[in-house]
Image 1 (cartoon, rainbow, N blue to C red):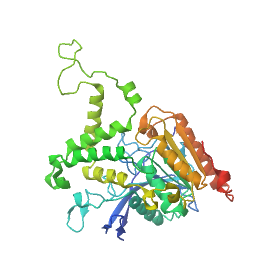
Image 2: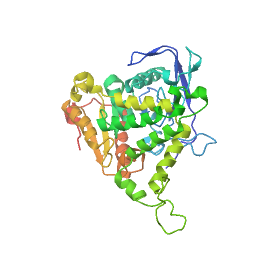
Image 3: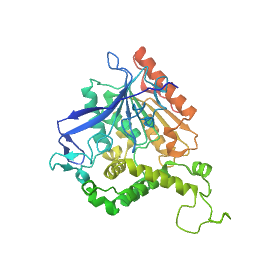
Image 4: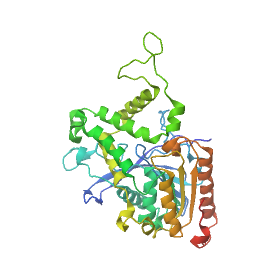
Length: 396
């Protein structure tokens, strides 16, 4: 499949204060973003891709001179790919509080001249969406052809449909949820406690000490990564295979607390790699944003009332072995949309890879998204008055 080639990030600075849901205000901030494809004359072919926890604005392509810098959804976005950049102008924006370019805990707090650290305000999914809308304003994009995301990115797409119903024609929500379960919140808190209890965390001001709370980040990533995989996928990849046998080669266990099993080795590798590039304060902020997301809370928990004002058409997809954001959670959104007679297409894909399936190359999944965007493209090329929502509804 053709690649989008080399890409370059851009930055956009905002000097107007951004009021956050917590009551705090960001007085001055910068957003990092990338664009792919060409914006048409009437700016109607723009698609916003929202990122998940440890991803960023770098959705597709590579950076010149960095051969291992492929974008996190490069299999989805590019020329001839399901989200085809020969047709659509795709935008990826790094969320506030991240460690990949947008203003976050690692950046200088203008009030103190030191890194924000733990003083960086708590941000929510809704805060991210509000800042994304401001960037779209600057680009002259008043309505997106679609807003799309997987996992935490799907939460942002859903929030777009609620907060700015006139600013997107389609909402694409992959492997996501209208709110976290108690179990999910619990996993997030265990991961946060691993960071907060690391002696090198220094209350969030570890930058000034020249250290990184690596042990906490390692454990946090290991906990999180377990939830992204299915039991079947782990069994197939690793099973109970031993990484090494005892020194005498008799195939016995080492009978110690080191790395005996392949799955242990894999998780430690993932934790080590994560601790090299991710910021501890960012991890705390993003997992809290996940926990706080619950748009139906303002409507007494009634998701149908929450989605009553939406105007977009929806595509939702879930994966059978995703126990982190199970199909039942996507179905909650679908049923709430159906109650509001919103046009919605839903697919539950039988895939063995757990939550990570939304990042992988399942042909049924890719063909679903491709077919959906082909329909979005047809709408752009031959606009017609929409039929009543009830006749447009698709629910499979």
